[in-house]
Length: 314
Ligand SMILES: [Zn+2]
Image (cartoon, rainbow, N blue to C red; front, side, top):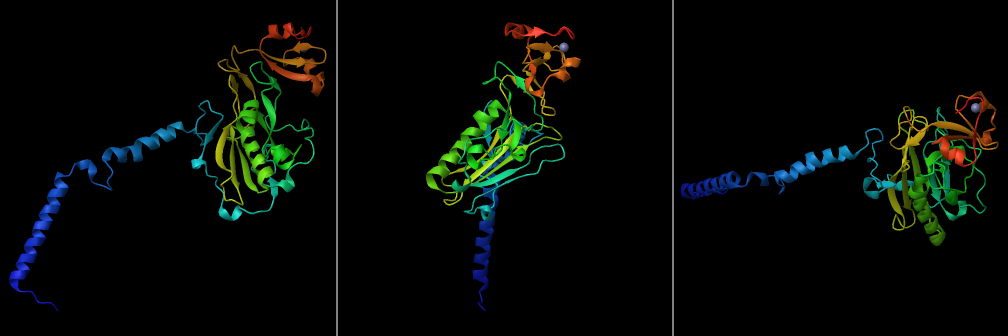
């Protein structure tokens, strides 16, 4: 064992004390906000407090996704899908959930490959009435109809026509502006490369609502591990200028309440061009294909050649 003379020990002790004092002084005179991890207090507040608060403020408390801010979709989870690596396989498949007790769709997932893409033209899907389905027409909607029967996994990807597990009540805007560009991206990629894309679409229903507030769309190309296709987005089931009651699918022009003093709701017979009040007993006699719900002004209808019913006198 090393033996030190008492003088050496004194010198060492002295050095230790000086080092200690220097350390204490450094800590005391260091600006307070520089102490931990090189992060200032201000930065720490921003990182832990304020930004989290901002984030939760931007989240819709019902869906857990960012509030609608005018864009058709929001990027989620840094645009990285929540897939596990073991899910990435080079074999095509598709799977759809059973409808739940309210008749609502669940998650739909497909490993899209050329071998399951459609070879025939799209068939009719008009027979399917997804949960919350209503026929509602507005002048401000492209194509007039507020709702489309909206494929979870687009027809061009897996060729599913009237599959109840794959069709939800979606706005024109969600269908065309929100979902379609992403579907096109996948379809183009698969056609060009022959690779697979793992693709999952999850409709987001709040509580017992019959109409989804939006859909989560996740996709990752398999053979190149996401180099070709990689996204994770939440697409809003909204339509500019229209307000929707997601519980029922009812809708009305924005700013005009459904219940009080709103635009009137009529039931039309598109065959004999009659306008009825919704509670008129003739409404039940109208054939399904001729019956249409209309929310708006009676004058507009009269201008289109409609006449009022003599019974209910709308
Ligand atoms: Zn009537």
